Image (cartoon, rainbow, N blue to C red; front, side):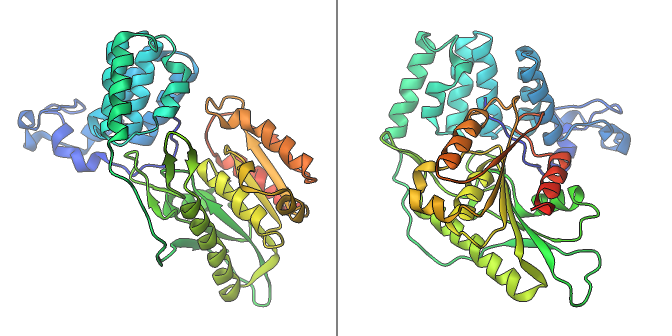
Length: 376
């Protein structure tokens, strides 16, 4: 099962004529059945947007109510039929229910809409009940064959405007310098939603909050952005190195820009990232010792293979907070221990904070991070 908790724009207005009911409060998939003169604002009351549906599906999944989870994803797909994540997660539900034909059918549909992480499918325990099924095996082999014939995705370095949003304190006092928190959203997120999250969760904190936008469009149907391209070759998985480095350079350039133009205390700069943004937080924060007082990584992997022992030793003065949830069903919950041990072995002193809720970044967790940073 893939986790996806980025804030998604409200999409139902785009479909209002197609989903409104002929009678108040009743939805209709056939637009021809709508009586336009009977539609009222009350018809939309109580409708759930995509974010609510994802959250509901996550709760049902953690309760192991896979039939209910499947129904919620089906409801979501009525409104976002090309959402590859929802299609994949629906395939997972069918896998958990032992429905091999449906699991194969929706796995193929997710591939057609852009989900190409077949190595993830091969290790996803949600498919264990159907993995040996002839139908499922045949579909997986077909998708692997299709993947071999995909056009090559290549890239060359080029200049690009790095986008970010800056939230200033309510009142900036002349002569005073303020802390700066740079936030890196997760895959599928964006700078606008993340800076709003930072603003809401930091009420009363006098600091500058900067949210940077990943440069690559998310290819999973979310409408959001990613920090790097993903390698999908048979011999190597993970971030494409050049795109990772260029994004890291962009974050540092943004830091330089903000420091040069706003009353920021350069000794009070913190980097905070969620999910894929946590991966970036480790990478940027520890590759640039002295630029950040501390880094906080929420629900993301530590890219140990990207660092030499000398690089990590040089970052020994950087304060590190690893935030992880025991309910996180992805790989990040297991990787938190590995990150802690690797960093300690290199001479760093990371702190670990455990929180509840799964693969999410909440206002409460943000406030805990701000308290941690204030005490450093």
